[in-house]
Length: 350
Ligand SMILES: NC(=O)c1ccc[n+]([C@@H]2O[C@H](COP(=O)([O-])OP(=O)(O)OC[C@H]3O[C@@H](n4cnc5c(N)ncnc54)[C@H](O)[C@@H]3O)[C@@H](O)[C@H]2O)c1
Image 1: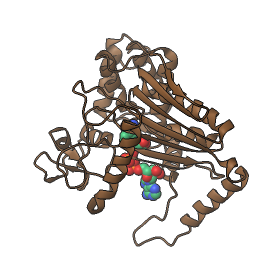
Image 2: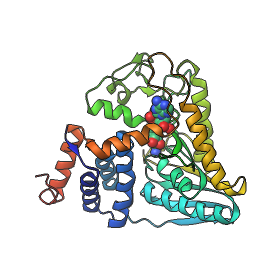
Image 3: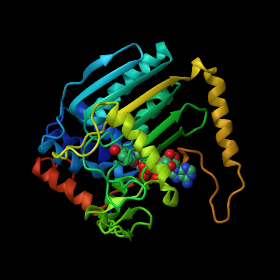
Image 4: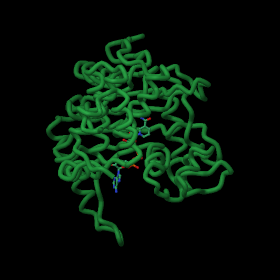
């Protein structure tokens, strides 16, 4: 597998998206989010996504340069129509506005619908944390094909419906939760398939409802399992609530749209810490709390306790030093696209 720098992967993805018709500033935003996902160790949401996004542009499912409309608003709320633009672009703009509203009103929320995939959710919740606020971001897959079987079921009826919450702190790395409400993100199954690796038991059921460790069984009529293993009803409950916030509150609805168009319905909320506690005190106490967790006596065989977000912070430092591994199948697709857009030479991919 090639090992590449973040800067090179960013440049390759950006050139390909521009080749597919994206305005340069939109391609820049998409790639910033994707490469941050790679850097955080979530390769399932990194450069591997670019060929798929280009397919969606070709199918008319993602519309580069789409308008961004406010459908309804109040001083604390906003309803955004992304008009099928890149989710990264529409959602980032909605989060910026929500942070601005929370600066004056202390609490603000927004929904976004009719937008493409928004990738790694921490990319938005962390924007609020960087502004000294608490950020919440949840997303479903709108009415695009579902991936997750509700607890007790053997067919997919829910999205991977992720949740991210980020808070400001004095820690070196940010304190945040960012997780799918399924056993894993669907992209991790695709990544294992692209890398020819088996997956742990408990991630998927095959089409016949039996447990499987073959990542390919997921795309062959299988389904992801909800978060929680034998207590998967809790993951199903979380996913159902996310779907209500992101599918029903946005007006997207539930179930599957027969066109199969991917649509990340999104609900986000921002809470201004200073409206509750002095920001500096809160940030110090979050750091102390993280350290309190980390000081826990390790369980047998465990490397110890990590605070939420710490794993990503460590991965980021490691990848800054060592680069990002790109699976051969993805690299081959990037090269083929670069050749198709006549940019292979300038990107060193010929
Ligand atoms: N846009 C979408 O439609 C969509 C859908 C699903 C997932 N996603 C994204 O996929 C990414 C991966 O999600 P996932 O659920 O597979 O991630 P994951 O299973 O790696 O869990 C990530 C969370 O768990 C924490 N964590 C991981 N290992 C830990 C440890 N040993 N100790 C303490 N905390 C630990 C991380 O800090 C993070 O908060 C996320 O960025 C998510 O936003 C996006």
